Image 1 (cartoon, rainbow, N blue to C red):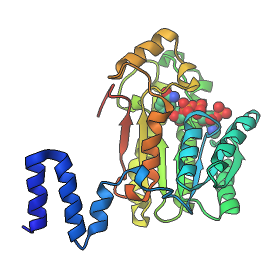
Image 2 (cartoon, rainbow, N blue to C red; image 1 turned 90 degrees about the vertical axis):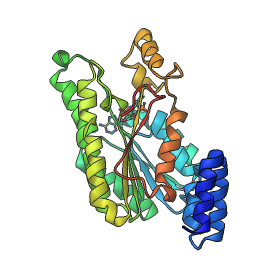
Image 3 (cartoon, rainbow, N blue to C red; image 1 turned 120 degrees about the vertical axis):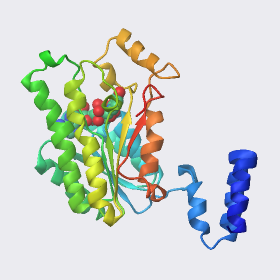
Length: 297
Ligand SMILES: NC(=O)c1ccc[n+]([C@@H]2O[C@H](COP(=O)([O-])OP(=O)(O)OC[C@H]3O[C@@H](n4cnc5c(N)ncnc54)[C@H](OP(=O)(O)O)[C@@H]3O)[C@@H](O)[C@H]2O)c1
């Protein structure tokens, strides 16, 4: 065993993580492989503007989670394609673009129903026409319904399948065709995929494809350095969640997290931001449950 490694293990056993970190750093400094060891302990904030020169596409980014992801990528130096769905929400989408540009990077807007392949192609065309490439895709767009299986209408089912299933697949297919090497696909799924909440079968069922796209996509695209991961939030305090809940059911959902509160947008952003960074290269094919500990899998 090398003296470096012995020092590292001694520190781990004797004095815990802090000493282990110090030992690891010392080991890195005296090793010819200093960069990887340092990278292990790097945090997103340590990688200032690590996405400079990259282009991110965020679907459903007029507000809420999508807007926050767009802002996070902009803070890291990426240009951002801000996708929005309904034409009448252009004002909100423009505000997202303004917040992106505030970070000194470029933003482009694109509108459309992503359940239609032509709109998905158009979204990537905007990335290429405006910025010359696409490096990061966040499949954030989604729709929700909370009804007992017996009450789900044909229209409800079609709406869920349109964006949560077909839209997510079409966006991932376009990304598989056009994303740069070392790119990133991040699927915003739901913690309901690890739980079993009544009345969410149509929503969670239509989102279930995201885990499969993640696992298969990681295998298919890994050879090009592209990582594919799913982030699966628990209840997040946005109108999307509240539109399906009463104050009483929202309070019940809040009580499921160990801190007894709903998630907020800023709880979800850091992991999505991190997964886009170069230092997240070794994380792929995973679903990351982020729900304040209300369930794990
Ligand atoms: N909030 C939560 O509790 C929670 C928990 C777990 C997962 N999530 C997921 O997080 C994502 C963002 O949710 P959010 O809370 O930030 O709500 P949100 O702002 O309403 O995000 C959903 C976005 O998807 C867009 N969209 C809906 N149908 C579309 C379609 N056919 N084509 C293209 N875009 C479409 C919506 O646009 P329009 O409004 O114009 O239709 C909206 O911008 C969703 O995928 C959701 O499933 C949310």
